[in-house]
Length: 266
Ligand SMILES: NC(=O)C1=CN([C@@H]2O[C@H](COP(=O)(O)OP(=O)(O)OC[C@H]3O[C@@H](n4cnc5c(N)ncnc54)[C@H](O)[C@@H]3O)[C@@H](O)[C@H]2O)C=CC1
Ligand SMILES: Nc1nc(O)c(N)c(N[C@@H]2O[C@H](COP(=O)(O)O)[C@@H](O)[C@H]2O)n1
Image 1 (cartoon, rainbow, N blue to C red):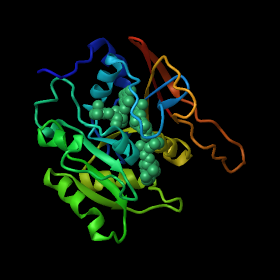
Image 2 (cartoon, protein in one colour):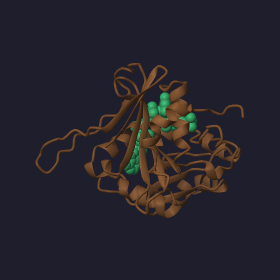
Image 3 (cartoon, helix red, strand yellow):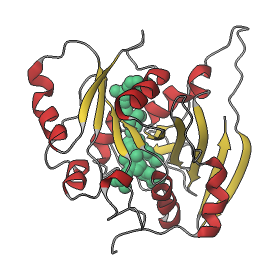
Image 4 (cartoon, protein in one colour):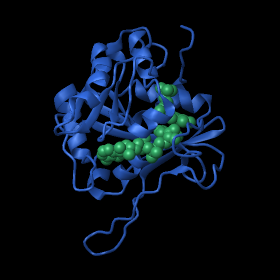
């Protein structure tokens, strides 16, 4: 099928230990953290700007990873900046029914994403090449007119809006996100793709780091320079006032054309 991607067997074998387990547990969904970064830890040149870092092979790997997850999660600023498709374009998945496709999840506590009938993720769903998104917003009393039109758009294609409680910092707790996805949508595995604020919120807290089942990062051979969106979590000190930097274990480096893919566990 034209426009589809393939990923070679010798590389998929190397990545397989970091994929979600074939037999899901009864616990929280498996969380894979994955993104593409520059040598100076940047995801993009500037907030609100999409920057292509992955080469063709590592981009195909991202789609291969998507085929193993029941959901893909991004923050609202990524949805706005990238207008992403958030589907899986790997050969064998495309054209085999949307039930094989991951569900796009957008973290949007304040309801900033103005999704319309021409948003790419909606067009992808319309064409039967992906699923409609679910948007996680702060639970509470929303003024009906704010979300009404957007709800109609996503619900028309099978998506929806779900309320989640905020913590004291106005964010969702990662455990609540995972519980909500499992309870409301039956999600067994979720691939967190970004952007910077989403990834930093996941990495800065020891409790949420423990929810990460695997880390798969594409590193592209470029420096984006100051002013980019960077992965660099706040240092949160433990009870002994000492900062212990998180470090990956079970590390594997896999060259992929000009990029290198780093796999590990937290
Ligand atoms: N290179 C890569 O792999 C990727 C690059 N990007 C790039 O990253 C940039 C966007 O990143 P950011 O500006 O940092 O925005 P973001 O995409 O992380 O979205 C930030 C928003 O998400 C929500 N959010 C984040 N964490 C939350 C939490 N724990 N609970 C509730 N809501 C939460 C908040 O509303 C926050 O304002 C874009 O330029 C995009 O192109 C995005 C994804 C992957
Ligand atoms: N793997 C990867 N490499 C890059 O260079 C990127 N900029 C991204 N961005 C992420 O991919 C999403 C776009 O997805 P679609 O191809 O439109 O489905 C984008 O929203 C980011 O999450 N990823």
